[in-house]
Amino acid sequence: MGFEHQDGTTQTYLHKGYVNTQTVIDVFDDFCETIDQTTVVILDNASCHTSKTFRASVERWAERGLLVYNIPPYSPELNAIERLWKKLKYQLMPANAWERFKTMLDTLTSKLAELGEVTYMPSLQHYAE
Picture 1: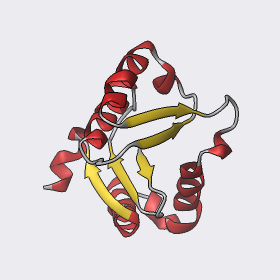
Picture 2: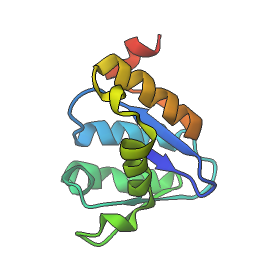
Picture 3: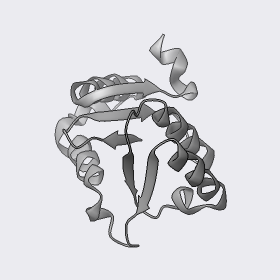
Picture 4: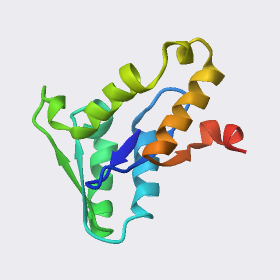
């Protein structure tokens, strides 16, 4: 998961396992700690972005300067970070990077670090150490 800034840098969060609403909320909570001005996050309409639990956090984030905007349904191409994920998956990652989990994670971490800051979620914290 990640946030692409207007200057082209990214702040990404690596997580091993299923991404659910709580995972996304944890990422947003952490991201709120890094902003120092009003920030708008543009989201698609994935179930974890539209769940009741996620929606309950939106006001709390707004109080901290993080505003959430959902793009219209069925138009993920309107979210610029989707282009980044596609480029990462199909152009920046060599084919052999996908052969083993450790190779994929090492390559992915390296490529993401070239683009900005990488944060390991608890599911991968042991890998970062």
